[in-house]
Image (cartoon, rainbow, N blue to C red; front, side, top):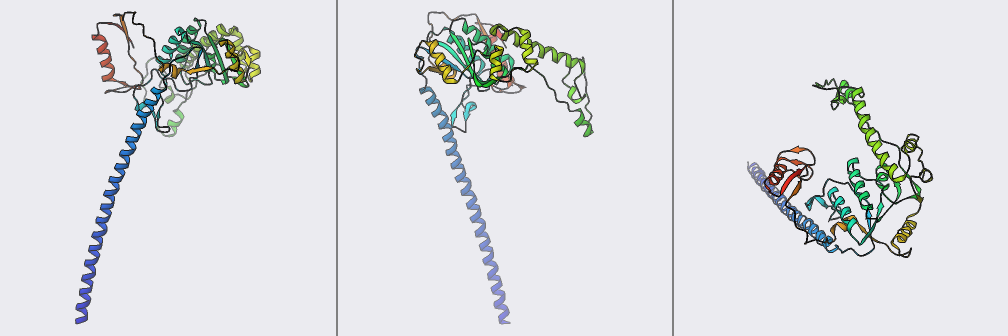
Length: 378
């Protein structure tokens, strides 16, 4: 029986070793996980500190780059970023994790204010429109175009150049004294259209039946869920507003380019502008030039040597330049408060891209209680 006792003892002793080893492995894994969480948290904290430091560093650098405007300056207007109703003042909204810098696009309010300011600035001699495609709707284009036309009243020049113009960009470019186009480029001139997607066929395949309550034949928002094509009423109203916008664009281009509206319609309907040569022949462009030739033309307007370096300032840089404050002009007690309500309505504070109920109501309340505010523009 002795061997059995020894074997039992060995088995018992082996079991204890396994338990101890298992507990040791468990606590080792637990300790390793705990240390991993701590290390990850520390690294994350350093990354967050780095991001914040980078944001503030870029702000300091951007402030250091602010320069006063020198004589014979030309505003370089590109409009290659999405144009919002107004720019955000929140640093984090404009922080780019790709470049670790703040990229603050100008809002429509900034653009209009800067163009109005440039009109009265004696150091600004003109505007160079470097346009290809403008990321905005027709209403925003119209506001900027009107501001450019107002700028021209100062007798300062506007020159436009692009390798290719989208239709919206060309609408802005027609405010220029000279519209130049790259010899290999083109101008998009084809008119406007509207397109609607219908879901009725998809819903039928899924055996989904939309329950619709509708009042009035021109209430067409629900038609994609109920029809497979536009109703006569919807087609009528769509043709009306699209046609109205297109006619307005043609009238604006006709006035600045001295081309008849009927000719502009003919060029668009027949898709006649297929090349740079077509654009020049039709009178949409004044000349076909390369960029270095355009710079020489600008130097002529500036009365400089044609090969001199042009003193360009982007509108973003001009926006940051020091402003003259007329202290002699008294501050009016009759003011109009402009309140921006952009995006969908939601509860709470909201932000620059949404209509927060608390934020907007607070702004209206402050305007109401301010004795100097006589009206509100929403």
